[in-house]
Amino acid sequence: MSFHSKFRNILLLSSLVPLLASAVAEQNGNQKRQVAEAEFTYWLHETCMGRIEDSVAEAIEMASRAAARLQDGEDTLAARYYELLYKAPRQLSGDPNDPIMQDELDITNTLQIISQATSVDEREEANVRFYCDNDGTPGATGARWQKVPDNMSLPARYRNSRRQDNIEWQDVVNHIRAELTFETCGGGMQGHTEGFKHQPRSNENDWPNEAEMRFVITICNLQLNAGTDRPNYARIADLPDANFAALPDHMDAFGAVTSMVILHELSHAIKREDHVYFWSPSTRLSREKAVYNADSMAFFGVLSKLADLQWRISDVPADAAVGILVRDFSLVPPNPRKLSAGELPKRNSGCVGNKAMVHGEDCRVFDRKEIGA
Ligand SMILES: [Zn+2]
Image (cartoon, rainbow, N blue to C red; front, side, top):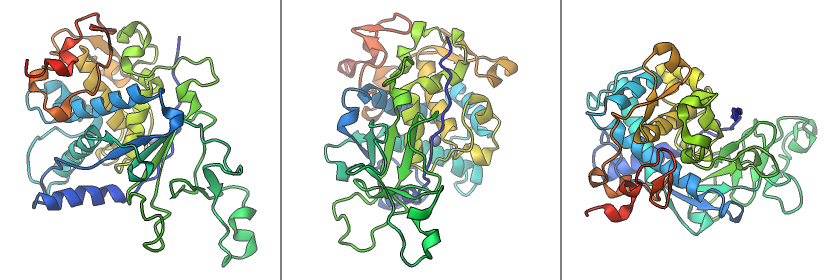
């Protein structure tokens, strides 16, 4: 069975996350320090309720584990993955003016920001708003997505209502304007992220309660298996058999898992773009592009979680190039006593009762209640 499917996600890169990071750096009084604390909040629309909470939790957990592994000098597997995906040796510390070190700090910061994401009840407060409405029917009365009104200062033939393609759209609920390349759910799209940068406040009275930094992420029906016979995998542990060596698409199989899609989309809120999709292309990117590639970050997160489950990429270069996974019982699952509160998974991901679906081992190590025991 193949559940290979194409990502076709749209990104709206924004300059607002650097704002977030620099604000925190200023609080620290040191521009070069890593961001240790950053507000990063998300909100679920009612169409996502009961559908993606576990996936969001696993995406956040993957970011947390990736950040922890990346900063662990004893984690040689993370160092290997970092070099494979980011084309530079992991340094851990170094001259903050060195572009290679800056990239490593940027990746660490981004993973940390995602790992500290917290849910809020008020949509307008949230930096990221998740919708599972398949984008509704853009343009319909009352729909979230509407055409951008015509700019009457343009000659009539250039106005939005006259365009055949490159029509401009805006999310009128969240006050977010899409790029010219905006495409809604459909075709092969699993999810897309749009950022606010093209609809800034024109004055301070515009949407006074809206978060300055805001993104809307739509998780499409293709990913949520609504109205299709495609299997839906909310989390890594939900993949059939959990025999990752047998996945027909190897690492690309995780593109069918909602948690990886969510991590990919969340990374768009923090400067990541879509240079390439899929495993092999991601491993062939230049360092400069890999650093800002959404799938590279999502794969790094998935690999960090897989290592917790005692799976890793093959050592054979030709196999690693296509993302073949192998079992490795020498990998040590995370010790809950070593995890700080911010690194704790929010749920017993992969566990049913006390049993891990993946390898049948006792799952209590992931339980918060074990901490400090
Ligand atoms: Zn994307």
